[in-house]
Length: 495
Image (cartoon, rainbow, N blue to C red; front, side):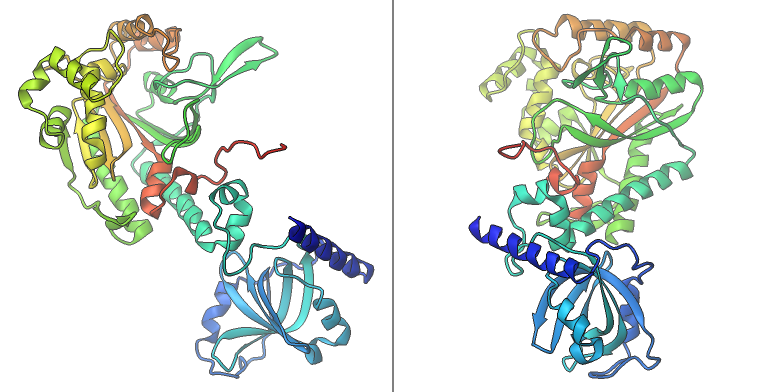
């Protein structure tokens, strides 16, 4: 800490010295710099110690990332949002006064450079500075060059610093932006209408999760931050929209892990007159196309494991997965008491009123989920754990639902929608009656949603895809915090 305080004091002394010399420390007159990445191809034909023939002066701006000073000359590396370039500064070209001021510059300063392109003896493309401009003085030192920024908590808490010293971090977030843009393009090209639904809701719904609560002063009413947009999007199907989607922020008052953040991004889309089978086809098409566009191939590597996203993808019912992958006996799946007992022997905690459907689902998560590396659709989820999904017409104990798993984690959840208002009311009420102390189930029934269904909702299917987990997959990121710019963290001590 003493060393840091000493460096901070030195920087402030340099800053004051520059200010006393009339140098603006936070000026705003260096306008319209050129992108460094556009300069790089211009040096392809240059040979060592050769200048660019036209003698054109180029203007670039960026942050100094390293500096080597040799008395009458210096080299420093400049980084903008696109690339790095070496800058050569020498006293006889800049002038005595300008060079003396330059000597007070530090790694981390944001500066402007005007100069000509040339190649050094070692063949490195460089910019020979004819004029230097201080743009923004950095008062804090960057992490030491050879060790970089490796402390995970500091990286997440000070994302700006993480992006400065770890360029690959910016690459991940640029890919995230591209994935969202392409997803929007994909759906809009297929006739989906992008909409916005409330983030503050009087009754949280569309998922089983503990909500965050707030209070509206003027209306004197409690509101809940959205845990899912589903019930509002389906209201729009009642209103006459055929295809809708929303790329939305959701908030769930739950634990934090490498796969969970209390604030996260979901894509939800709904289409009338299709079934969950149609959405499986659409999902294959979307994600495989995103992989091709973002990664250049449908065969990718995630955390050292090869993953093939080339359609068609494997499709298994939950029962089939429990037998083929989980190793359970097929006869056991028809015996409710045996299933419940097996779940308990595996350490699964079940509510007293839990049935075979809940036991199957918990056993699936324990025995099967992590083994699903290549994309796999798991279908036929028990009705007991699917309060919003349509019952299967041949077997009412299961629903027309799928979840998509890739690299052992859920990426998407979809089903043919329940549009029977009587059945929906009964299922909502059953959840409430059996809620007990479960804070993830809201104790109030959403009567307005039931009323909407009573007006009639066309047959439809809907799906939610976790954008954060999809970005993790396509950028080979181990943690959800690696793909969220500012993940939630405990306050620093003293805050």
